[in-house]
Image 1 (tube, rainbow, N blue to C red):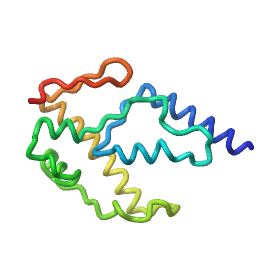
Image 2: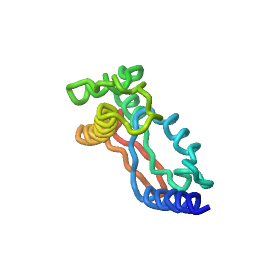
Image 3: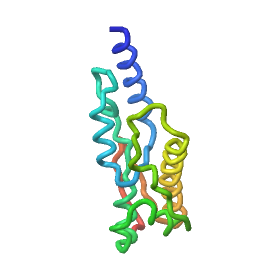
Image 4: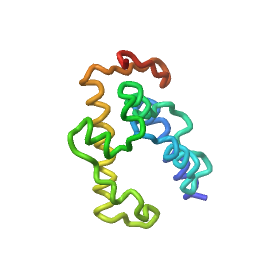
Length: 141
């Protein structure tokens, strides 16, 4: 089937691309499991050839234990001075096309996590990476 061949080629290309990219998320274990489990018509699963994912929630918790039970919105408020509006989080993401509000939410959610990552580094809480996605945290006390 040509559609499966094209989809498998796209999955392989995505996996190769992400092999050299650092992807940052917040409390993203379930999201990654869903992405890895979703085939989108491909016979080959997504994101199997990369360990480039970093969940920043444990890094924040280690540096600021008092923030352990906070979600992304309140973490954004703490580090960035403004909470993230999570109103679209539980909307119907399976429905296509996405609404403008969903697209804006997804973009802000991604931007906020990337900005938190930068903020952590700017405050001297370094996380260095060695080899194939192995993480070593320093200065997080």
